[in-house]
Image (cartoon, rainbow, N blue to C red; front, side, top):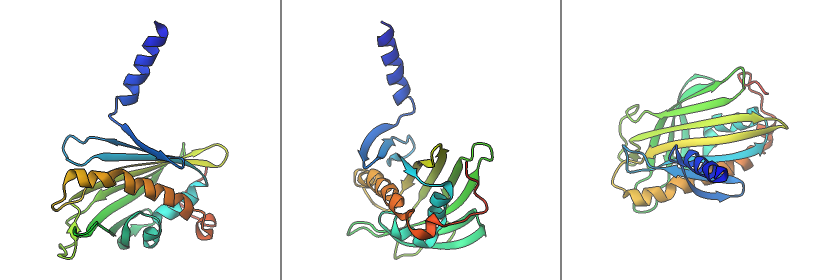
Length: 210
């Protein structure tokens, strides 16, 4: 009876936040959940890497290099840099023909907990920051959060959670096919990107290691 109760408790806690397992490959696991106010699902991707916090943060903050690892990212540009840890960026995401490529404008802020050393990068959409460009479909709503948790033995647990309304006429079932694919591939690519010498040797005075 006790084991049955334990199993029930574990099952309820596992699904209490609504996340459902979607896919796992090469040490990267993805989950999705329904968003009550949107036809498009939210995603969560997790993995663990052998790296320093500085190494991972250096990749995330290098806007110009985003097309090298962010899946389907065709262009990336910093529009305004308020500080080393806060900026507004513009990215172009390739869409399958005949859909227009998506243009997203985001306001990103990075924080580090001085006690736990956990790093959080939060991005929120700024769709009205620039006038609309008829060449692209402006992303209506986007929000994301990277959480980097340092672990003993020189490891970092990476969690990425996000939600995007791609805008324009695009059926939710088609968009939701990319909900898992794009973030999953991006995190896998991030693990490769961070091994480049420029990131291994990176120094960031605003990041403190565990």
